[in-house]
Amino acid sequence: MRDPKIDEVWEKIEEEVRNLNEKYGTPVKIAIVGFGKSGKSTLFNAIFGEDLQRVGAQTDLTQENREEKRFGTIFTDTRGFGTKLVSLEEIKMALEGQNLIIHC
Image (cartoon, rainbow, N blue to C red; front, side):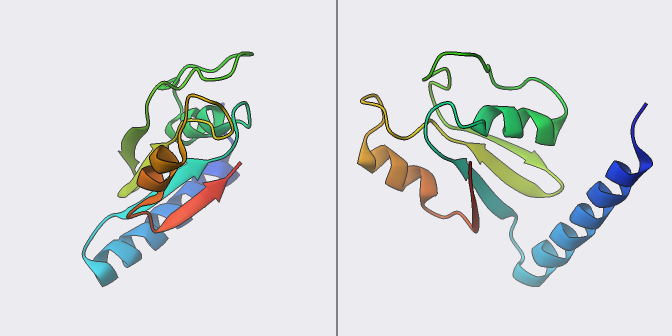
């Protein structure tokens, strides 16, 4: 059973995002970033209420950035920083055009 307080929080988030979208005429973009194994994909999955991204005990499970839309907002789950597989240029590209960055 869902907690009604969580539903209230989501409703407030949706309202704020609608206001921003109306004000600026474009969807808000939020990137979820951080080092490998910091919980980025877990947070991404929690936002959507389903397992969209693989999570586990090993690093580098996220092979490429993934964008999904909820609340009129585009959320991007990024690859983990701090590994040899993710270059500084890739990190810069992931952050380009984002309105907000959540650092895990």
